[in-house]
Image (cartoon, rainbow, N blue to C red):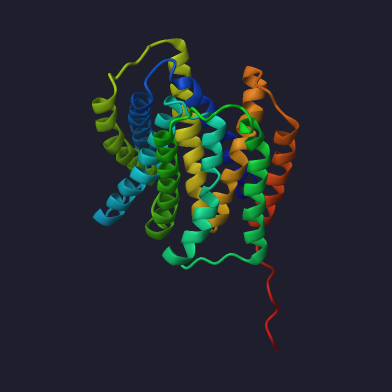
Length: 296
């Protein structure tokens, strides 16, 4: 089985686990502090891996700068906003709904930034995917008394979603060449540069060194920061940016399923039905337009 076939499924599986990590990471560390440690560890491990593998580093300054800037948006602002918002009381499921807006934002912005066009079928798939996410998660908040959720963290969560949308397009614009392993290393340098000052300014930099913290850190770095991100960069380079972003639709329903299996959280019928709708939407959004035979 080729990497092109299994990469989307692996990416979604790894990326969705990040919501579980975000929910429980606060037990052992403050959110921005955890992310700063995670980014530093990921950058060091990536750099060591690149050295052993003989990866060719970008030789021009512009590629280095573009890689660092893309990391600021893809990881630094995005995860910083999401983790901080969850730490301030935004439910992980609601945060997942906000994250699911990214494909719509990407589809709307891509024509203006990179001239990318979607077919009507792909547009229908994106709309269907969002409907599936709403069906899967929104019933949890109907009449559930979530009026006390603070407004500013939700706004910051939305800003984080907009940040990763722009970072995805920026990646497609400026980083079409170069070894993705070297680019990923530089991106985590950019994420650390923007996250560490906020962690030092807003948090006491608390870290509880325990087995739980180490386990979460190892999975966050190896499984998500290295495995999932390499797969995402691969997908962005191989296909349309909006089609790659549509895979994000699968994250909230899958994260709900993972939470049900791992922690016994309720898995409702709307979640199950919404997951099937999401899968159908992602399938349509990732279908290639039919080739028209040339006129004779």
